Image 1 (tube, rainbow, N blue to C red):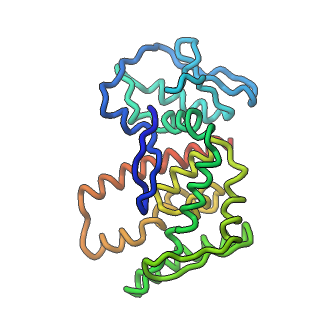
Image 2: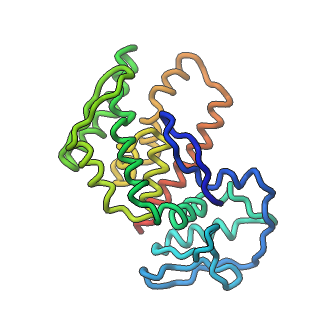
Amino acid sequence: MSDQPGSGPRGRPIIVPGREATARPLPRRFYSTVEVAAGAKAVGHAILLDGRTARTPGKRELRLASEPLAQAVAAEWAAQQDFIDPAGMPLTRLVNTAIDGVAARMADVAADIAKYAGNDLLCYRADFPAGLAARQSQLWDPVLAWLAETCGATLAVGTGLMPIAQSAEAGRCISSAIAPLDPMRLTALHVMTTLMGSAVLALAVLAGRLTPEAAWEAAHIDEDWQIAEWGEDAEAMARRRHRWQEMQAAASLARLTGL
């Protein structure tokens, strides 16, 4: 349940919470009871295992400001059987990442998200076939319009693969949207951004402008077009299902943190 470097869209380094844990033998469940100890928001709600506060892989206490999030994380611990399987604890993995990793390097994580926005998926359009270009405009243009309305800057859009230069105002727009986020929501935003290749779609989910399902559909227009033309690849679809599970966990982390 720790971090491992991976590769995100366009080759950027990302953090994939807990992936390397699946390569090691699973630890046995060492506790009987799981509870949430209510506490002040500043102190956090502790996850208790047999009455003792659980700890992250970095040995920090597992305390969460949001009680709904704490209850959801506790439910993952309670659902473990004879062995503790990180694959069945997506929220716990993300929370550990936020506490042990992101909290100490907020500026770096925010800057990485801003870099994605500078090369955002929604800015690169197809000019052929016409049906694909129309589908991109249908799903992407309203999200870009929402971003412009929200922070007063418009991202440039073009066709082809050549890099598109974005204005300084657009960069400030994205940075201003990221700046207020706490470690939990910043972690959620980073994971969604790297999974979809779009900071704009991730911000729309975070703000409630798009559902996770709608954002995921918008992020896979090109892939779905190819599937409709040439059929599915079983291995690729299995990877996509796994990424969707990670997307759902990140969206849940953002939603529960705000409750």
